[in-house]
Amino acid sequence: MKKIVLLIGILLLILACGKKENSGNGQNNGSKELNIYTWTYFIPEEVIADFQKETGIKVNLSYYDSNDVMMTKLMSGAKGFDIISPSTDYVDILIKSELIEKLDKSKLKNIYDNLDPDLKLNELSGIYDQGLEYSIPYTYSATGIAVNKKFMKDYPQTFDIFSQSQYKGKMTMLDDGREVLGATLQFLGYSSDSVNDAELEAAKNKLIEWKKNLAKFDATAFGKSVATGEFYAAHGYAENVYGELDESEYENFDYFIPKGAMMYIDSMAIVKGAPNMENAYKFLEFLYRPENFVKVYEQFKAPSVIKGIEEKSNVKPIVKANQVVENAKLPGALSDEAKEKHDKIWNEVKLSN
Image 1: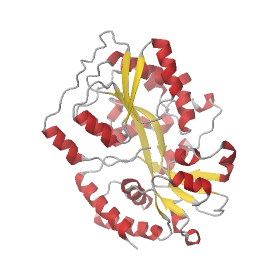
Image 2: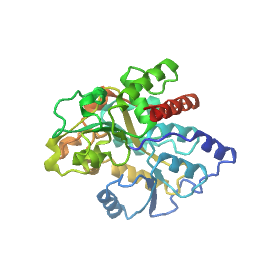
Image 3: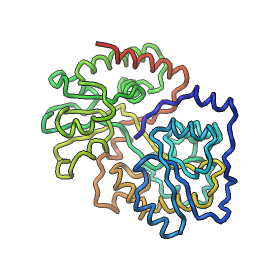
Image 4: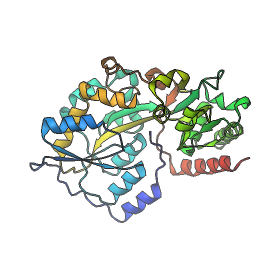
């Protein structure tokens, strides 16, 4: 999952200089191509190949490594993209910036009808895209904690796992202020978007308490580190950890979603004025067919946004849907005031002894 902080100043500056129109006119004009701008390893290669074979439409993939990169490119007038894969807090900005299309749901009826009601996706959409008018959920999960049970035998399945001084120097948390501070605020019963000084101070103090037992804040190597036993517990994304393991090793590891965890949803959206609009609709309809979306589920091993998918697969999810629904909350985009205050608190935590 991809955690990023919106560079409001940069985007407003680009807007002030004049937003260029996408060169597409929203019609295919007989085109047999489709241009997707997305995350690396986000769409299964087999699905792409099957779509090309069925339709004769050639799919061209371009990649970004953060929502900021994607946003900046679109805001600067980049041309030719049809589909993008924004995270929830960026969907809201894309809508307000008129950079994505309002979807014609009549062409995607089977997708919306098949969204899993247990995940409360329509309810959650109120935070970023009321009624899912501009985006379709694609991945759904939350940031949890991985434990190497060969070395850590007794621990609480909460963020207070980091209060255990007997494991000092053998645990890590993400080096991501939005993720870590937001989760700490939620753990304490506050909003992850809080601007309340007393609440932020309480979160800072709790983080400093946990930090005394951490080896470090780490957003890059935590998966390999906990898999090898260098560290015993790591706050981070399941795929980073389990991607380092053979299935035979799974039983030696625990991954849980603690109360207060940060939920994330990545989506699919059509770029405003997409040059291959009809091909974009064809691809989305194809991608979300249950027989194809099962490949997405098997790649991420996380709760499927399409109902009934897990029953079609022999692959067991690492992250359980009920854990996400019950323990995690979906954050919105930070206001300018909140961002300034959160950055200040995070810097104080990082500099603390």
